[in-house]
Image 1 (cartoon, one colour):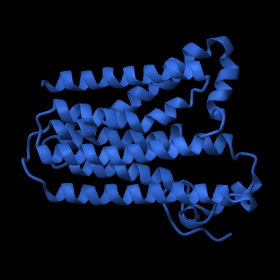
Image 2 (cartoon, helix red, strand yellow):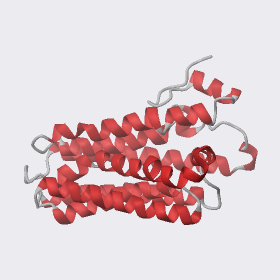
Image 3 (spheres, rainbow, N blue to C red):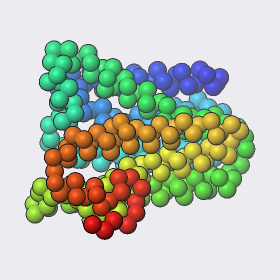
Length: 261
């Protein structure tokens, strides 16, 4: 299949997938379904590409499987975390702001925007499966796999540590600063970016693969400046003195030893 058509088909598919999620969110009155579908959307793109592309089979399979492992883990994590809880405060605030118009605003501001970002971030996965050369796995594939694995372990462990911390009644109202969270305020986001930088390194082995650097750059910028670090700390922890002290001694993103007071 022509590469341009393949990319267009994937964009249409993920837009349709998110639009279906939007329709469900209207029935359930919960726009946080978009977050639940985020990881699944990458899995959809990965396997649509796998069955459309004529690239080197081993690299195609490896990329599709790695994205599936990451995406399904994230889906299960978010589904478990959000079970029995109401709508995310971000979406609830928008719902209160736009009122009767929220049903339409949520379509393009929540679901279709996420579809576009998802497709852009997955450009490396798509191109890596389209490329026919080199018709062998290289040291860059191995290096990228190691980076991807490190990112998955860090993200998974950080999520598990936070969930266990929040589940303990004695930690209610306290700031998580243990385990990986002692060295970074957002180790889960750091791990997620490593996953996509690892995939980028794999794709570097293909001709013009360096052009897909847009994928890890977009996810890194998104988590740092748009939906991750900045948004969370400006909305949920801005009035928490304990968290402000945590900010002063702990890096926001890159793990490092805590600073002395």
